[in-house]
Image (cartoon, rainbow, N blue to C red; front, side):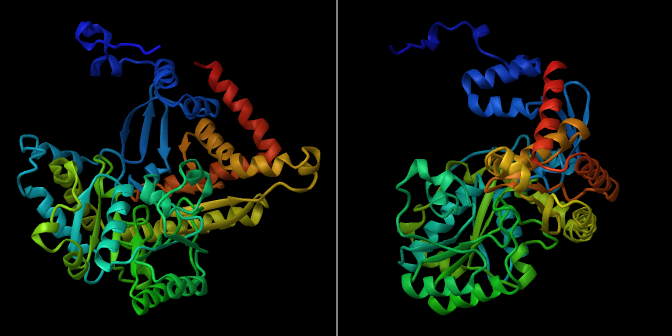
Length: 471
């Protein structure tokens, strides 16, 4: 039986105000998420102690409602390159507090400045941008303009890739787990192995695609780095076959890998580039795709086509202001160079741990986008558990290690979506050597105590129980 919610008879006290929300306790927040949001996610986060109530953040540091301080080595999956609540981003937003945020029948000033800045900092002939709300939306726009400008339909994408969870972006995302429930997806999408230039070449010949979309480094795939020269050869092959190269720099962009954009590490000039995450300075959600004048004109260059692709929030003054300020800070503080230097230091320390502990299978990364992959249990542990140790470790070992880092050492990390056996280390680019050393020391202690999946499971269970009892 349907419940009739008559808003007209609801008393003001029946809904929560901002002040009411700020007064909620940790357990009350958890209960609200379980009742009105995603209950399974809330239960999972609560089980491993990831349901903390964070109330303040500044730079690398975050504080919970109990007064505990944490180091953020997750950086919101690359959205916090400048750290939390950067004063210059907040100051820029204060300057435009009286400026209209949304007037669709105008050409917003701050959006104009952002479009200019993106043309300046991106590679080669990239010039014309569309300002949007998120990375997935940037991917959608990139796919649309590729079809509109080429007249072709096929897209080629990589195994283990991640481009978002909207229908178009999901259609070129290479993990079945996220695709299966929504199939059939966008037709004419062809998967090739990441880093395999021969397979790409064969697909270009066979399908004559509109575009090849690729992450210069696969973030959610487990921080996978392609063979040297792969991106440059992919770009050459795409040009040869009339296929557009779409570089998804949503996670790798804005200094994360030690260059402004990861494709610049191989001097690659894409035809279309997707950006988001740190474009908003860690304060505003925003994204963009950028392309050449030639491609833009073919797709949207006439009066009758100017509104074929649009968005209500594309003229968002606050988001554009955050983007303008973020780019200014990034360049002025030379954070790309800092990411390169501190990333090398971090990886060197992690490789030293790898030489001590067989549980670490591999350390991969560029700049401050780093992944640690752990070894599958096998052996006696697998025999004792009838193969379950390997299966569980593939999905949960990264979570258990991240849980230990959070609950015992107050360091925030997470696993990568497409490879849960990899934890990512993706701190803000303002991170210091001392803060990196703190993570290395914590990992050293954790790995010294735990020799395999079963011991991790026992330790993490104990930590979670203690955390639950303290509530």
